Amino acid sequence: MSLAPNLRNKRQLARTVLAVIVIGAIVLYAYRRWGASESSPRNDLLGQMPADASAVLYIDLDALRQSPFLAEFYKWAPQAKVDADYAQFLQSTGFNYENDLNRLSIALLNPSQDSTVYAVADGRFDRKKISAYASQTGTRENRNGREIFSVPLSGSTRRIAVTFLRNDRIALTNGSSLESPPSTPPTDSDAQAWRERFRRLAGSPVFAVVQQNGAAGAAFSAQAPRGFQSPQLSALIDHLQWITVAGKPDADRLRVVLEGEATAEAPARQLSGVLNGLLVLAQAGLSDQKMRQQLQPEVREAYLEVLKSAEVSQIDRGETKSVRLIFDLTPKFLESVRTAMPLARPAPQSKSLPNKSTIRN
Image 1: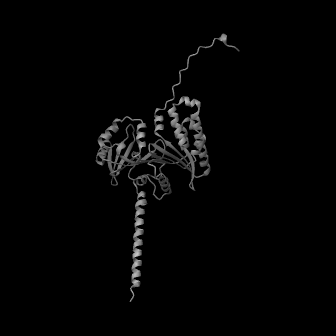
Image 2: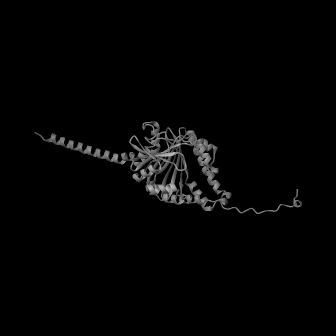
Image 3: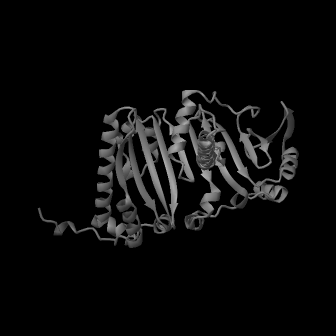
């Protein structure tokens, strides 16, 4: 009796087992490599945001602290005076957002004078101390097994509701309820649209996503510097369905990326042309002799540095057409914004009125 068939079967079985092991290892690696990113703290935090929000702001302070730019930003930012309420909060809870806050995501709902804010934050919280402080300054109650604190806002009749989602995560809102996030089902198309924008911004530790409601153009016109105010630009901005602003540190500077997304190609193409035109006009304006006299040389050079780093491009994503503006914020620019002052003009010399007898027709 020949043993060859049995030997061949054993070899075939060994190859099959080996293949299964290799495939299993690949699947396990892929899950750990890419699947883990789906359940990362960033995605987990953004997943708490309501899909019917008008805007979402995300800040990863852990990532920003590792960049030299944050130190430059702290040097530039005005040092706000700590009020009595915040000083008491620091003393009672031991929580300082500059050191203890890791990540923060904020959603704005129903943008108006009385808009609702819903925020979720990760950090190093002393739950016992914070709960005691919130109980002393406000009220505490249990709803559906969750401990919710209601604390009055300083200088306002409104209150803010706070709850612990876990020991290192809190949620808060100035709305009426914290029993569950004010969100639509995760299978909703709006939720998918938000997730897609968040995915595109995965490399940015700070960003804002705005779902357009037709008011961004007017807001830009009201806030833009005089040289950048343009009715045409405001009208084109109102055609955008989404606006994103993202910042990514690069050594001691911050790369800023603004993107406007429309469903039609014409507004995107026109917006690209307007932005390029404004950049050219801005550089020409800074080269004007009158502007040279009004601006300090280092301030003018800092502005020119930002303008020269700016790039405008168009992106075709099929269903949507986008315009992207990229520029760098440098330490020189931050310093110039802080210290920029027009050069003092010489006081006009008083001149005596000419004698009528000397006036010739």
